[in-house]
Image (tube, rainbow, N blue to C red):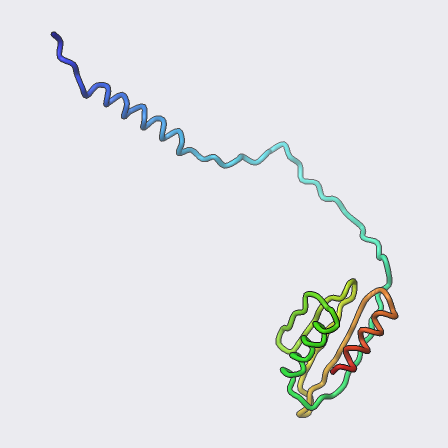
Length: 135
């Protein structure tokens, strides 16, 4: 009876496994399509309205930090969205309107500048007035 070589099938299985695994190790990244041509399209945006800009300023007897904190509170109370405070600068959005409140120290007082911009002149004026009255 011939002796059976146990190592021979193990060698072949090991070799097949190495070949199989080395095929899986290749990169699966998608090659860029060399036939694709990048096209740039110029889009002209037409103005739907001429923006209105209303502003106001005054001197306050409080710190710029307190002025900015009040600005955040005022914009939130009026229903502004995305209200952001960056240092002593506050801004927010109300529908298609944008408001900004800037508080700076001038001669030991706080100078506050308020601006509101948007399409509807009546709404812009009203928002500016509400902000300035609450300051």
